[in-house]
Image 1: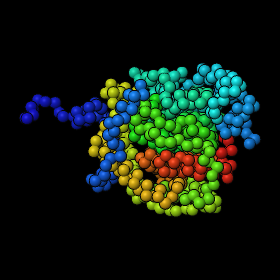
Image 2: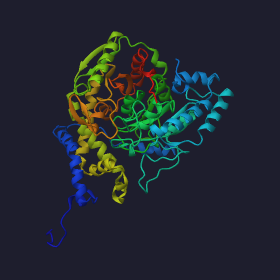
Image 3: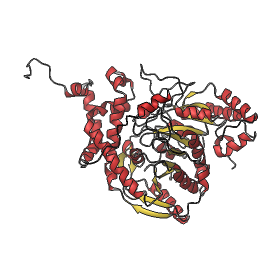
Image 4: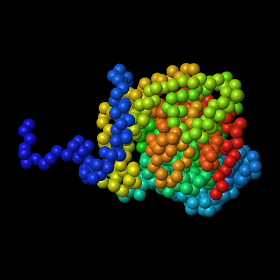
Length: 69
Length: 464
């Protein structure tokens, strides 16, 4: 689909993340996130292709809770 | 024990209450009186129960009539302000408009009431148990310093003798860190051991509910009441609940102690490291075997817990974020909730994959050891308002340093306790952390108790 030249500029933070944050706050947030991001980037280096996530889907949980009520 | 009544542990109070030698009304009034005189300095409580004395009176009558419910009957207990309570408001430390919580009991407070405990009031927490500070709570050992958090109000109140036990919650160390810097005992049970129904969520797969106590025996007595299956918490497990207090007296001879020499011993304040090494030697002197090992995978833990905690917290606060209510949060909490948007779904799931391999590493270690010990925190209580601390000759952010040794046990869900193990050169408390296999709180408590009774750390009281 062609992008109309009169469409407003795409704001990735607003549109992708669904929250408007002022440019000043976004700058502050990104600065705060830098150290955290460095740690998450390290995590990305791990090859965990064949590992199941620890949090699993458990369809019976809601039935147990309903049974209590 | 020649301690004033307000400083006596539950294990001392309970038999005397049962025998009619100590009055629950006197205890409640003593706690309220100390709150009145000391909490203007400590700021540990956000709400005082209007019903505490009436509940104490009812407990006293019930006991006098021969209906003693157990060791918590008539005992004044403080409740962290992220547990819902039917007769006290819950704020989770926020003043943001448009956010309120129901008046109903959490599973834990309901269990405490059923056991006859007197819920004395609600203690302050970091806002939504997140961020860096528990404003404006101060540490009873030095009023210019923080009690850590997020269960800082509970730890400060307990250390100052404003209650005989307290509830806390622990997502990355929030029971154990304040226990460590306030010279009390803090137990994070296994994930799924204690119901979190009615505890305001912070990060669903990391949050744990548990007690802060004056002694290891007190922690065991509280866990006896708090532990058990509850279908209202989907993570809660139907595992047998032993009598934790009964298990304490077994000897530690032949106990296999593990010491993880990477991560936990790479960067500590000198006094902390010295105190913990002495504690390790003490276990060895009692006949325990000590095995040293390394878990290199811990290098990736901080990224994993950040990814999970940030993403989960932001998901929980999504409605507030969209409605603009987060601008009324504390600045650090607002920033953390906003930057949680920057964690991708694949980062989150990778962190959950990482937990699986980390748990596998710990399970291999626990095939050859019974308990892993080390420092609870690399630092002692820091000055209020400080954002960096000196650790191992370098300046480090409080946020990074304080929870370095506690969050691995949130990622793995393993039971872990912090007990007092000494004081630094400024007279500030140091904590020793012991962790165990899933649902083996009994061994963790037994080892902790064996150390505790050979030392007098718990008998030292802050001068206020």
